[in-house]
Length: 206
Image (cartoon, rainbow, N blue to C red; front, side, top):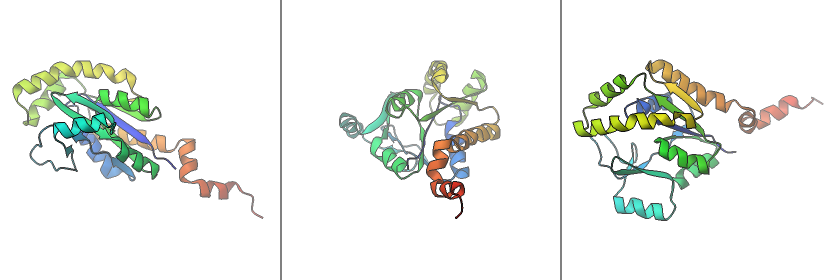
């Protein structure tokens, strides 16, 4: 039995991380894959929980060894998803969620063409600017650089299976949960998860 692989992407500041965190509290048997990154650890972040904080040399060595499903350089830092961890979870029948950018999603699509890919959009560019500014964790020049890249990032929505507008948080969360639920209810998944029950139901009683 193999689990489902979900990919959630968005432009920086769209609220993707908050939505994923809330989703994991509501949905059972959904495991988020913790990414590796070379960026510095922010206040309140825990190694192995929010990210695997990795030295740049060690990260690039893993790239050379083919250890990542996807990796990308974003704003001068590297991010990547370990292939062995994801494949192990899927083989156990666990559904896995990757919270990555569109570049990573593109790489995942080549290795896992059946992955379900979701793109989150903000309600407006003005709203996106406000969200980035309200974080209070990045310098002004970093915020401006991210804003200049956001429009180009959002143009990638056409390559995804689902698009969710994060205007109202609760509605966006409901939409995201609905995508997970709907994919779990397709025929092959239901047969895999409930094979014994289905066989019993369709077997005439003696």
